[in-house]
Length: 233
Image (cartoon, rainbow, N blue to C red; front, side):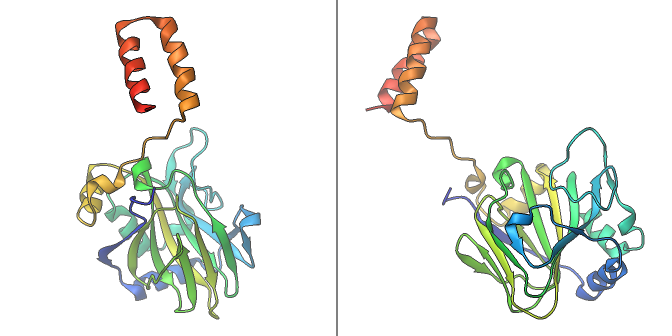
């Protein structure tokens, strides 16, 4: 896990004034309190720009069911947000604005299967932030400025504390890996740093596997038994 890429600051910079103009269109709409209520203190809320079923109140990170992924009505007049989203040539699973109020804290947590090596990934574009926001990823503080574009490997423990006096709002895009994203990511980091590590198997588990393979008594199972026994030495 320690060899995996934890974050990337892409060489992309978006127009801060246009970002903030669009977010102000949405500020008075119906923001939903984040559903992981045990993971934060203060106010942490969200509104979906792309969601399953095209509902702005559907702020789930992962699609459930068979409804299609669509733009929501929240983005109708936000032309720059839509321009940015369309510029990323990969399938989106959700796009949300995440708003962490001044004084609010997101406790240390992980979001499973959101590393690039999993085939799913998360991009952050800060829209409104301040220098007193402390975003900690695996014990490292990341300074993400307005208009920048970051990949965050959410499999690592992360937390956020907004110690400033203004709300922090990020445009957060979740998507599915493809050839276009491979080209984007592998310009910034070695392809081998996105390989998912093989799970470690204990000797006790290997012995149980060997017993099952012995019952099969085939040429392939015999070879697998030999390989497993070598790995136990």
